[in-house]
Image 1 (cartoon, rainbow, N blue to C red):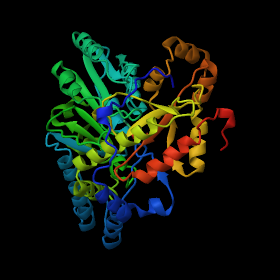
Image 2: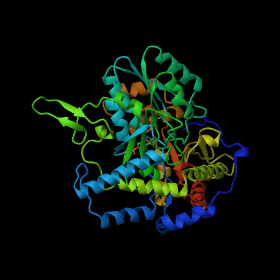
Image 3: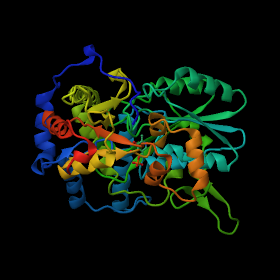
Image 4: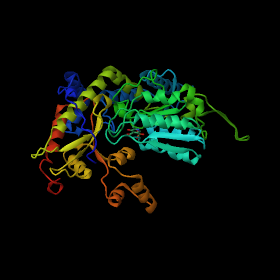
Amino acid sequence: MQQGASEFLKEDQIDISLPDEDFFSELRKKEYSRVDDNSEIYLDYTGGNIYPASLVKKHQEMLLNGVFGNPHSINPTSKRSSELVDAARKKVLEFFNAKDYVCVFTQNATNALRIVGESYPFNEHTEYILLSDNHNSVNGIREYCKKKGGSVTYVPVQYEDLQINEELLKNLLKEHTQNKKVLFSYPAQSNVTGVKHSLKWVEYARSLGCDVILDAAAFVPTSKLDLSEVQPDFVSVSFYKIFGYPTGLGCLLIHKDSFQKLTKPWFAGGTVTLVSVNSQDHYLTNTHERFEDGTLNYLDIPAIKMGLDYIDSIGIERISQRINSVIRVFAHRLQGLKHSNGTPLLKIFGPEDFNKRGGNMIMSFYDPQGNTFSTELIEEKASRQNISIRTGCFCNPGVDEINNCITTDELATYFTTHKDGNYHDMIASIGKMRGSVRVSVGFITNEADMDTFCNFVNQFKDKTEAEITL
Ligand SMILES: Cc1ncc(COP(=O)(O)O)c(C=O)c1O
């Protein structure tokens, strides 16, 4: 990571006390005691949230006390499953205040995005415009676009603060909407830097005639998304990121006005009202079922309602405030860690305004001479101390290419001279650093977690990479 990104903490943003400490400390004991029982320092909440014990117990009770059949039939066990799936769907729509939306259950956010990619009517008059700060599951949609003759334009985030360059984005959207149909895609929160990209771009882009995908996978675990206030055409979500259990479930929220914009490229069990083999005709359903291929995960989907009820019992605004405070305090403490010669042990990247951040941040560690420690070494050393952090590019290469100043020419040379490639080979080939260290917090992250991680960082004090022992 280069050292060019801005210093981020303004003095007036520093509040060293954690709000709601009694409540969240009790909650940690009651619902998450296994974290401390196992001496885990969990700082990878953007990777996946931790499930509360009561959610697993409630779901287990449901499974142990009932008999559930495959939905799509009127027999009693099938009806029971259908009712629970319907209740979960209703809860999702209520949770996001999404009365204008259809909720399609998927395996995860990635599969929600894939549905849009494979069904969006891309053609030679389409421009797929996306922020460079996108997860690969959004980046990958560009392949559907290109295969159907469309073009792709990336809007780079700014090197200085990793935020949207507003003028550039406005100009690109205006320019391309003059003679093309634009599909615009961006994350409500970066899974790398934690930057919350303003939701105002949804309405701005729609007012120019764009269709908009809002990737909300990293945003909704830390913030309230009210789909009566902001109305993207398509929204992607993974539920394990919000309440930890079960994995393997997400949803695609489709604005009712945009439902017919998607053209499903095939049909499958559960998606049709009628199919003929003889005449090779079929009718697709006009509901969420159109995009739910085959048998739904009907035993786990009821747990989505339980999970969202759990989040409601705490309150998403309360969660949001808590996470914002934790990350603010944590960043302040980390920023204060110095070598004996006064140089910082690490640098955190991103915007100065902490209201523009969710629960994750990226950083690089430096030796006293300002040389960067390898991220692999840091993750390995942290893992040996039972600290779960994540390093690398986090499936979001765009922001990393900007932060590490990797040029288009360097990338083009690598890709044209290598039949196959990988991250480590590219680092060796280009001779530039890639990746960073990501720390992400949840609402139960506490002072002890921060102490442990700060002590861990201090193990790098006054040392060069060669002097670090694992
Ligand atoms: C912003 C964002 N989008 C999409 C995804 C993909 O989510 P999943 O792997 O659950 O499909 C992630 C996962 O980390 C993410 O953070």
